[in-house]
Image (tube, rainbow, N blue to C red):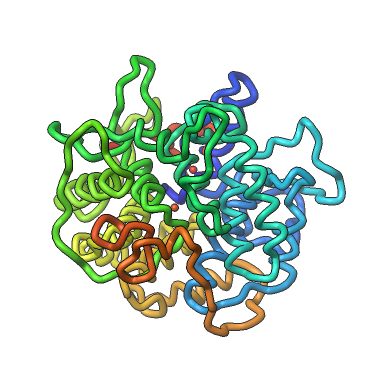
Length: 419
């Protein structure tokens, strides 16, 4: 995801949203140049947080808690201070003492990520529920969500919101709008039918002609979303090989397995996903996409196919160090999540201690006590191992349009279309 929304991508998205009110895909932001003003002491990372401050802070918290680390109080306080009275979060607001108003650009991706992070930190459930309530209040008529309230639904935003609502304890089938549509009704409209070379994949959104184009970032996000999963998933045992199920009336878990089938095939040749070339770039050759590859690893493990991600984990161990160092906390968080989801040693990931590297990007953690995260009702339902809403056999979660290839924003965490 790229880093799950690249700051550049987010910046571009912001520009697009301001000019055309159109959302961008969720991609992990690649941090932008260092800011010219002093950053809050509780914030993770040293790059400009304008487009990804809340996002990178939230990913850092979620991944830390997954491996037994508790963030510093000042870091948690900073994230809490970003929440508006409505319950929504913006990408970043430099002065939290100034109340949010109509000009404050809040978004679903930052809010969904923060909801999950605060849930994992514990002790802030009122804030979690407030954020979840805002997310439900801006659900689109098709049942999904776009990057900003009221913008057209996309697979990435819908998926990360699903994850946030699940972690907040919502029964997803009960999250309906005035039309009676659920989040899954919207998400499955982005699924590409089996049969063609991209069968099983998800599109970010239909293109201008109404066609669905396979997108690796959207597919990884949608696999998690279709399973009602959040950003962090556990280490599930591998089951039978993924397969693509056809039909006009797919269940969410079947669509998730179809997405896993596509991702396994996309990773099989090189072990990684690629990002499309930047518009106008002289070199048109695709470049490895570290963030989306990490997200695909998490998705495959959640679906019960971590064996299909083994080569990708090895590739990340051998090649991701420079990318993570450049992109900072969100990148380290994505790698921690990928390692955690596959049972890989987070303290010896290609010789690197990912947890120590992530911790070093923010205030010193307060404790390293093992977290006691509890599964939501949605996650427990019909789960064979307590880690999925339909059982591990089927899969057991900005860019504002900025930079067609810069990627760090959810979603995507948030993105460019890619095969």
